[in-house]
Image (cartoon, rainbow, N blue to C red):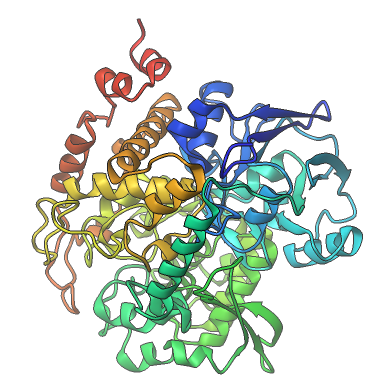
Length: 622
């Protein structure tokens, strides 16, 4: 067995009802690491070009990384990966909690599904043995109900990754949920599972995950737990409350979008409104803390609302992105309604960023008379109307009324509404962009463009402790836009390694940047340096962009919403008068990556230098 790996993945042909193991060879592990690195390599090789992502031919995978389920401080993650039915590009979304380590300890590094089952099924993986089970009794159930039922049937020690009713209905915002609130959220990948009649993947196991140097892993864990809990490096303060700790600050400093990106922080969402979303307010609702498998940060929580229109017995604490999406971006300072909207998304299985972006878009359409009460089913879609926001979120999750239109993606919804709605739809290729404003950090524009709507991929927000200008130089002022594109290359490549290793990015940002190479060395027995990490990350980035070009879904040529660039610039607030120079930063980024400026095409020489000869042949022939 390879150190850090179980050395095999499971292939399930749902149409034939067959299960087959595939050994992971050294090339896959050495050159693509794990997670969406190995998953991308396998799907690129096995799936024909331009396949319909909701057809039986499409492949979807759930993959761990070599740090998942080991003593590495932040080895908690797994990734869902497939061609996105929302954007048409490569799609990957990762999640923490307990499912990733459970899948590994059940004997597999990952599971891939192809074909379509004749009726709803779920996959059970139990200590190296896999089987397909009838899921008709849980089809239509929420993710919470699904987990409860399966634990009654298979024991409390199982872990479940499932879709909700939204995924079953092929909702383009649908996602995969584990741990009743840990979510692999973006790109609509829940719909891919739904199209295959797969309700859930269940993992049960206690197989050991071998590491090359157990003593070194143990010592590194002590070192980095100390950095997190005692020295409070980077974002280590997250153990207090988690990502919601930033919500109030982001709403005021210009980082969080306000009122569908048209408003100004601290002006159109005031200090008083922001205080209602301060993390200390969550303490009034939190019943207990929640942490992912063996994580010392323990940044999550469980909350309840005792009474009122949003009463809830148990819900997952909303993250920053959710707080901003249903908060400042909807002009909403009603914390209870945000908790309720988050709970709707988690139970029915939809992405909170996409849903919040869609609600904000709908409110502005209503404000401008593009939709009416007849369209909304009587809802008064006003900024800050918490009850209407929660109800429209339910409509989106269930594909009813106006929600049926919105859940197709912001591009298609805007086209259907018409009358200039496209100008109000803040998205890239249908995916609503996340809650960090490029007018606050200009490099975010390139990240949103190249990874449609996705926020955790690079930028100086993803720069851990110890990084100096010799590694990635962003400058210190947003007005200094030159150089940001060049800096993105290194940070993107390293983010690929963090994600594909099965590590948590927030944990990574709470330690010195050497933590990932050091843990990979101790776990796998291979010498991991910063240069090696960058090379592996670059290989993954090039293959991902080649996949998009092959699918004729190229983010480089996609529309980017002018409003999010400051065109026209805001007249008030902390980012007033500022416009992002997207052409400058994108051009720098493409040059640094060695990709053409017109379509972002990796050069033949670049692909060959990374050992991607077959990909070079696909793109260039010969």
